[in-house]
Each structure stands twice: as C-alpha cells, then as structure tokens.
Image (tube, rainbow, N blue to C red):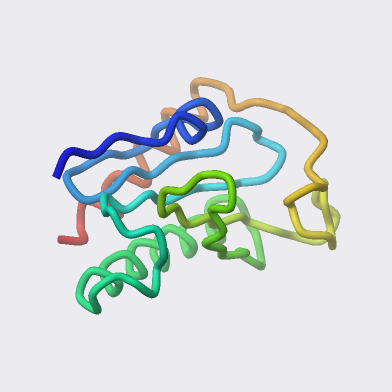
Length: 137
C-alpha cells in the first residue's frame, strides 16, 4: 500500500518512528507529552480494522502510553481517535497530570502555551520509543 502522512500531521509534529506499519509522531508543542500513532491503513475508524490489525494498533498504543507515563511522570494518559479535521486514522496519547497547562480541561481548545522540544530531548525520545515499537511485529 502506498502511504503518505496527512499534511496537517506532517506540519504539527516531529517524526519519532516509521516502519512499514505505522508512523509515531510527537506534537511539536512540548507543553504536554502528546504522541500520535498513525497506522498505515485506508480505514479512518479504529472499529473498522480487522481484529488482528486492531490488536496490533492497540498494543502499540498501550506500550507507548505506558512509556509516556514512565518517561514524563504522568499519572494519566488520555487516549483519543478523533480525526474531525484530519481524515486519516491517527490515535492521540496525551500525558496528563494535575497542574499541567490544561488541567483539568481537555487539551483540545485549551492548549495555549507553545514551548518546543530541544533537539537533545527529541533524540532521547526517539531512541527510547523506537525499540518499543520495533518489538511489535
């Protein structure tokens, strides 16, 4: 399957990991740890995936969410598949903790700060998440 990332996702994120099955992206704003998994599929809805593919996607999200909790010390990870404006399946995993920039509101429509990631931190994040996703075949 020929796969290309939606232009909005390309613009708004840092690529962390790409293989034949998915992209893992990091939202450019470092205000909150916000990772986005983009499965390489033509389906736009998670429930439309065949069970084996859905299980693989959810296993990736499960492992990335656990990593977000540990790496960023977040007691909660919000998980969403919205896609109202980006008609390509993509799954949001957002680390949350009391006192964060949007707490306790949802991030959508409430994220106003726009700090960015340092290149050294980006490299560290890439180095840590790649083996996690590489281990899922």
